[in-house]
Image 1: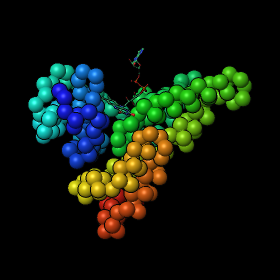
Image 2 (image 1 turned 60 degrees about the vertical axis):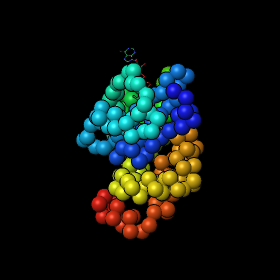
Image 3 (image 1 turned 180 degrees about the horizontal axis):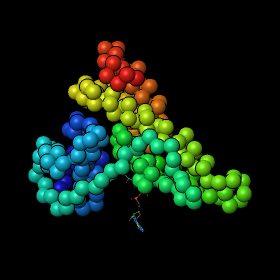
Length: 209
Ligand SMILES: Cc1cc2nc3c(=O)[nH]c(=O)nc-3n(C[C@H](O)[C@H](O)[C@H](O)COP(=O)(O)OP(=O)(O)OC[C@H]3O[C@@H](n4cnc5c(N)ncnc54)[C@H](O)[C@@H]3O)c2cc1C
């Protein structure tokens, strides 16, 4: 299906509450999906079909493979290791609870696991407990900010989407975040500075933050 609107990667933040729709062009097909991080609510086949139906070009395409995947979004856990077992990536729920990004945390936690094991085998550390501390301080603490970003943005989705559409600064910030050049904490603070005080106050009241 040749159409210039489908030749670049699309993230559509206005299409799904507490999530987004994506379109990734592949060589001979499109990878299309919806992601949602709404606590306690499932993402449904209907949400994906609605996203496809509403798209001016996608709605004419044929669907050849429809699948769902469970996510294990970042939770506040202090323990990522027990005895000689280290949990990394999805197995440790190292997936950001705003955008569902899990590739960078998976690679990073794998690297930290390798470094911890080398230190242990070299006799530099007495046990593997340092792994949990490193995962918390180098990866998982950022999920607190990712979760706040999700709550903040989804508290007023219409306004957030308009802001995102109109602000090149914000768009660059999210691209930098996805590229690993910015932290969630940094983005959270920057977005807070962009929002009108009325929205910030109502967010504080709702989330007691
Ligand atoms: C549809 C979808 C889209 C996503 N898009 C993005 C994205 O755009 N960006 C992003 O950052 N993240 C994305 N994620 C999340 C990301 O893919 C995962 O967080 C990441 O792949 C986790 O890496 P992992 O190594 O922990 O697990 P996995 O990538 O799942 O790797 C685990 C591997 O272990 C194998 N395995 C399982 N059980 C056994 C067994 N018993 N014996 C041997 N092997 C076994 C599996 O086959 C698999 O190959 C997406 C996830 C999904 C489902």
